[in-house]
Amino acid sequence: NAGVTQTPKFRILKIGQSMTLQCTQDMNHNYMYWYRQDPGMGLKLIYYSVGAGITDKGEVPNGYNVSRSTTEDFPLRLELAAPSQTSVYFCASSERGIQETQYFGPGTRLLVL
Amino acid sequence: AQKITQTQPGMFVQEKEAVTLDCTYDTSDPSYGLFWYKQPSSGEMIFLIYQGSYDQQNATEGRYSLNFQKARKSANLVISASQLGDSAMYFCAMRSSLDNTDKLIFGTGTRLQVFP
Image (cartoon, rainbow over all chains, first blue to last red; front, side):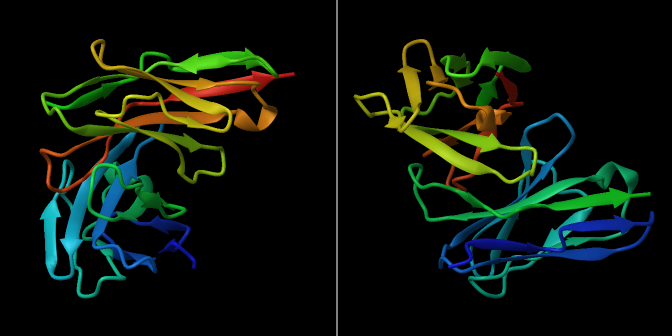
C-alpha cells in the first residue's frame, strides 16, 4: 500500500513551458486534491475532484488544469509556466466526511525560471 | 468565511519540556473537524491528530493532545516531553460539513525548534 505517490519530485521549467504533475493513490479514495505551498505559507487549494469524471476549481486555479479519468489518478497540468508558479505542489486524497484524514503525497518542488 | 489563524510564526522549546502551539478558527458551521499536521524539513505532510466539533473529550494521540475550547474557537496543539525530532513546521487545518468538497483550510503554520 503506497498511499499517495507523486512524480516528479523536483523539476525546473523555463517560462512558457508546460508540464504535467502526476498523482496516484491506491486507497480507492473518491476525493482528491491539489494544493500548492509557497515559501513560509500554508497550503492553498488549486483543484479538487469528488470522483472520476468530476473536477472543480479551488482557491487558486489560474494557470492550471486537471483531469480525473480514473479513481486512482489525478494529474495537474501547468500550461505556459510563470515564475509565480514556483512552489511545492501536494496531492492529497481522502474518504468523504469531515472526520476523514486527508493523506498527502510527498510533494513536487517546481522552480520556474 | 472560514479561516484558520496561527499567530506564532516560531516557537522554541527545550527537550523534554511541553509546548503549546496556538490555533484559532472561524466558521459558522456547527459541524466541523480540526486537524494538525507536521511538516519536517524533508517536506512531507504528516497527520498528527483530529478533533471533531461535537467531540466531548479532547483528542489525544501519544505525546500529542488537542486543547479544544469550542466557545473560544481555539484548538491548540500540546506536545508533551518534546524531542529533537519534533522540530518542524506545524499546521492547523479545518474541514467543514457545509463544504461538500471536504477540502482542508490551512493556517500559515508555526515553526517549532526543540533545543537540547
